[in-house]
Image (cartoon, rainbow, N blue to C red; front, side, top):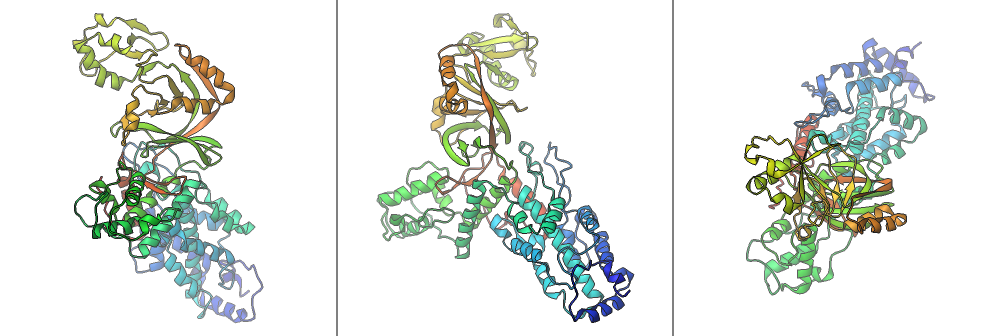
Length: 606
């Protein structure tokens, strides 16, 4: 039969039109055994460089396809993610086409585009709405090939174009699906203290099912994170992009500090700058948007609002850091939003109907119920050299009057020098010196210890601080289950919560209003037990039933519940390494910097 060779590559799923008998004769005559579509598919798969490196030939299609293939991530120093699955790979494509009998997935037998093809192409064109670059998925090459397939002359080159277009489409879906749902890079490629694992993705199975059911549009809609915080940040990115397209916002010239009573052209520029509502749902304040070169109280209030959103002490004056932040180019803030959209892709899809949400750079903890914030408080987090790790866990108990088992690093670094000088410090701090197994320790009299002999990290004891007014954990501790020994707790040093920068702890999280948090976590039925426990000096554990999920995250850009776009200092310097990791991905795809790491942009002075 004349159709034999052509059927090897294209399944006959529809009745051919009147013009196609002639076309089929031409195709069969022109296509030798190596030119059938299955042969072209296999040849393309075999021709890519190892690890997805671009082919160095002049074949732009082959380069575009090879660049879409992913190589295994490079873990950060000390990272453990050395075998994280990435999509697509050559094996992924081979398996997909083998499962489909080496048939075309995105075109019909005549080379016409299927409805699902348009659906995917439309999604790729809108990839920028998610902070992704459409060209990461060879969109321009797909658009060009899409105009060429199904048109004469119908020779072996037509078969090649069909094969190339189909492969590029399949690779584009796999890469886009992975990028949008689990992130362009794995967090372990950046830092080894980020312990949230991106959601699992099975794109092969999902694509096969969506093609059978005709539900590709629904599949694409389900790919991004379902969280309201992600959706709000996407909307903020749209607003920033609009400002970019209009030429950006005005820069305020250097000069004396601006404050109430100031006037002149710099005040006019400041008023115009603050009238820009990019990245926020609310509109510009009418007083800020109005005319006038005098710095009035309405303008001062607008400055304070800006300062609060950028984690600056809100004094209502413009100078120093406030001026630097106002003059940061809009494209820098767009890139900052893109970085944080990526971080949302790394967190669990199911946060819990009731959960605790901690944002480390914001020094903020909130209780979320049904997707809405119902309560919040200020917190203190770990210092840069003892950072609070990023992870998800469960709060399983509230410990009333907790003792503090002093970590060895703190005992050696902070307490040992004091003990050498004055062993009576034990009594002042309510500390006990213990040795032996944890389950059956023996107390040691500090006066019997030769403190001067304890050098070079040798410390065969443990320090324990009994409950009391000076206990470092305060009256309440919130017990978690993680291996890092991180938990939430009260503190006697209440003044720390009044500071703007609150990265001050050894890693655990201090809570400003722990009693309110405990009452909300334990529920109405346990309020009497909580009050009873607080009236006594003894340690007591109150179970949180059911355990409440807690997500300790790291966002330097987010949209608050009122719709305002906020930024926070990169206290653990995570942004830079993330940009570098995205650069590595972008260089494999297009040979240029990542969309979220343009060299022209510069970070604000902090």
